Length: 382
Ligand SMILES: Cc1cc2nc3c(=O)[nH]c(=O)nc-3n(C[C@H](O)[C@H](O)[C@H](O)COP(=O)(O)OP(=O)(O)OC[C@H]3O[C@@H](n4cnc5c(N)ncnc54)[C@H](O)[C@@H]3O)c2cc1C
Image (cartoon, rainbow, N blue to C red; front, top):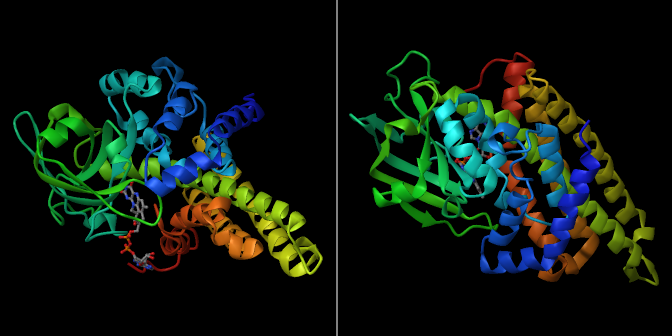
């Protein structure tokens, strides 16, 4: 039996060493938390899903969720380092033994960072099967042409997982066939013509646009079977949704804790604002919603770790937790009144950060559409 309490306490200790001023400062200067990510790696928390034989902790998704929830609860920005956990499933399940032996020990030790995955394109967005980036086979490798957008942490990663077409759209009968997944050495790709352009965005997420112009990558970069890459990426997506849901639970708890403390101490009309039910009730409602969403996250993670089907639960967990954290963020802004807008209180920073999960990596609408079609058997709408 894994002691998740101990994981929580150890993660909290690291976070407290950095404090919220650290995140506020980075947010202001749009800088990356290099020291924090290093410490999380060397302490073994970012390698939690890597099997022990490759130098990782070999734990399950449930334990990984505890790490991300605690990071968020402590006011840290888990978005800076969560990708390594999200993409691990793709590499573990579809990578060759050679790839796993070569990369996983180095990722475990922190020698290599796998913090970037490139799926989204400017003209396809949510409709992933319409991506245009093309990898063409040559004698000794692949030539990549195309464009990606919103690719986070690419400047702070050594490796990137890329989804590209290996057959033109419509060439194969199944619309999810004809894609392949590649593990790319970012420095090598830059030398071969990969251009990276920063996007100035609402949160400190280090997202970029990528331009592939005849970029060569060697043969052995392909992960899994040629033309079957969509499945390999999808395999990692349930884990990603559950992990993001746990970040949202942490964000929600953060907002509730801050709101409660502020409501107990802020005096207006000679009494604590927390005495007003107009302030109490929304916080109590958020608390109930976070607790309920947390049960769904737990259910989804248990199914995932047990190797059971969990598509519906992973999607519902992500939507419920993201909705609950967004509502808790709005409630915290309300509780703090004007001071919610002040950078010093960190509420506005976390409010901006948690908003992302309404949209990425999958939007609320797309989750509802998944549930309608795949769980309720309603007609397909697109
Ligand atoms: C900060 C940030 C970081 C990101 N990091 C990464 C990353 O590291 N790697 C990566 O690959 N991607 C990343 N993304 C991309 C993210 O996954 C996409 O933004 C998201 O999937 C939505 O795609 P889109 O922005 O093109 O929206 P669109 O697909 O253009 O959709 C716009 C709106 O229309 C709605 N919509 C579209 N179709 C339908 C429909 N049929 N029914 C109902 N509603 C619909 C959507 O729900 C959405 O609200 C990131 C995005 C952001 C903002």
